[in-house]
Length: 412
Length: 92
Image 1 (cartoon, rainbow over the protein chains, first blue to last red):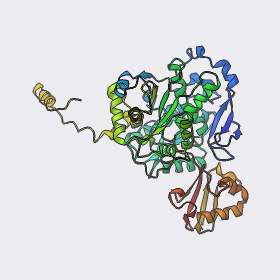
Image 2 (cartoon, rainbow over the protein chains, first blue to last red):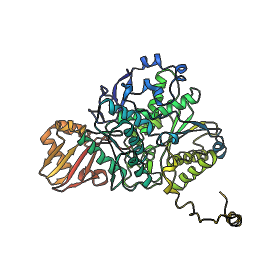
Image 3 (cartoon, rainbow over the protein chains, first blue to last red):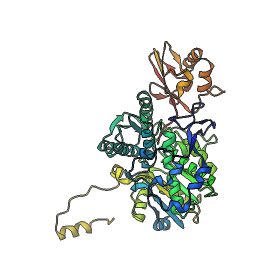
């Protein structure tokens, strides 16, 4: 059973049945899943939600999986929304909440879209799945593939942090390390998926994959007592997370659950900011970056596939886009860790840095209720700290040596 | 021979043909003119905007390099080039 009506092109409005279609057949624009919202309204009730399982399938009416047995159960979603009072003091914001997706099964929000995409791959009986990835998606896809007993192929830049290339292999995936950037890996993954008939979650399963990410918005809404915040700060790689959140908002509004959208604020690293530059330009088109250079490698997508739509979402909600530099991003990671005990990858530091910058220049008001999306764990990216922390010299196991060590050391 | 590879969604413009070999040397624009001669107006209409620019959802790669980073439609196409036409979907 399901409430899916079909697919609709975000660019030209053409409609299609809900089949395996990567892009619009008419203009090649991005597709989104549509639902029979009048039918959804009858069963999607606040009181019932509380009784449902604590994973992303609690929003099943608004997810495009028809066959429940196709789901892979890794307990994805329902992550904590943490009240970040100390971070609020540090940044002079009255109310900050941290949506902590570092605690998903493979430590990033990517488990959400993958859950939906892999369920569709099983519904359609595809022979294998895969992805093009900057690391987080690789782990998420590989884990879900393992549980689904499907072969998995991960295309990633060979230069990724070693841990990010290792994790999918532990889950049994085949990693194809591509010489070049993420965009090179994506291009060749697209050609490979096409030639071999495999389901690549963020390529030819993309319209369905995108649906998983909007559960971040649904959860935030539910965890805030069925209210949306004033602002959501969203890290931008391809921009698809932003467009998914915006779609989630539209659905809640059409169901009569919410009225006004949160201001959607997008953030990228200065060393790879095609969407931010596009936001600032009159034509609103992303400005592709050929050679991204940033510690936030999970956001290092030079030619973002959903950038234009992400810019439209930010403009439509009176949000803005911002691009802090790498030192500010790492400061953001450290601040969040020390204020709230949450260790994020640099993408999360990017959201903290943007909030800090936006408070300094007034783009965000002290009294606005802010949600920061912390989309991945810092444990996958230890190498970015190599220069910031001196190597530790061994201390002999006696009190005098410890006193001498602590005496000569900056604490912290 | 120039090898033109179209991802399956784009291949609607070439009546489903996904790999086309063409004897050609010149510019990307010249190559597309030749393909338009072979597959007619529908190819042109699906790949180009009315003003002659490539549609924003179509990416063109010449020997693996995005044509936007080369010389766009003036990019030279050597006789043994591979040209990919792919939908613009990148990133998760």
